[in-house]
Image (cartoon, rainbow, N blue to C red; front, side, top):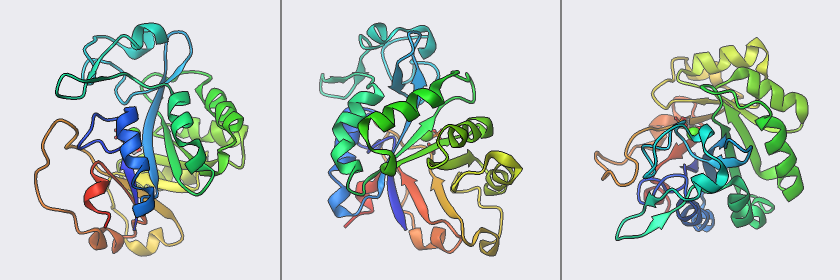
Length: 244
Ligand code: G3P
Ligand code: CA
């Protein structure tokens, strides 16, 4: 089972922050496959890393991210505990942090958060930037939007892609319906097809819940049970708990 850090190490550090990504990158030597994060566009066209369309949950600001310029967003504080703060990172800051690792096998799944607001032009922008950094080999692009995945594949046919949905059957439906994609990215509880139907596919399943500062509850997942369902990779909020 390949393990990825979902929004970085997002159980013990604020999600989608440079600290969460630094902590995850340090797990590369323990076998972490890569990091997943979410990108959106600011009012002035910068790509920033943030999960929600609104800044309310993760920062001290309010309103839709797309209505902020980068300079305005950078003023917002992300509470990191003990009086310390993080800022919403740009994707450039994350690529600066990870570029060397991405050239030597570590991976980054960039989810384009564009199914609520389409953010026209984001596909072109991220593909051009990844090319500039020379890290194409390490990147997997994903989206819940089949049109966006299709667009990425059209712009760069060599780009690695994953199609997101809750149920794996819906991921497969979108893939076969024309978006292509190299991998299926379902919710971990959304495996509604028998393993035989998933043979030959890369199936990267994501978990939800238990994000910083919420304390973890429940027992450790038995990853072999996920593997038995045909899942090949898993995005975990607390990958550090699963790596030796
Ligand atoms: O990319 C996998 C997963 O992150 C998709 O769901 O809501 O956590 O972005 P969400
Ligand atoms: Ca995501």
